[in-house]
Image (cartoon, rainbow, N blue to C red; front, side, top):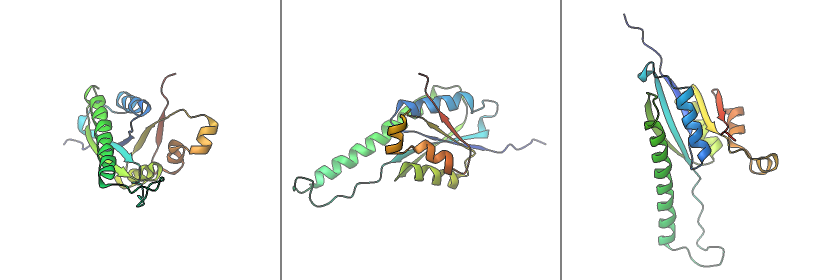
Length: 162
């Protein structure tokens, strides 16, 4: 009788940064086993910023045209496609064997990532580190710091080589 192995669920937060692609690459080399290709599901999670609230007037008093709003939405779609294509290429170029699913969220990245990890029942969250200094991190906040404290699974924060 063949023993059924439990599926491992790994969420990798990806964005347009080199740090996130490095974290994905690190994950594939270090966390994904090629022993049993069906034992791991890798979720590539991209979080779009929340859509801006458009007022009828921009800062200079001119009306936003529909073409400006449409152009901004098109740019957002192209950015998502670009990030996911890069992440796909990293996965294809690795020797790791796993199922890959793409997830797209919208909102504040730290909250969306933590909610998604919980909803999926993830075993591990992997994220890159932008390497902000103390002051910038204090002012901007750190998505990885928040996720380390609030995610409902172990979090691996991957620092890129110097």
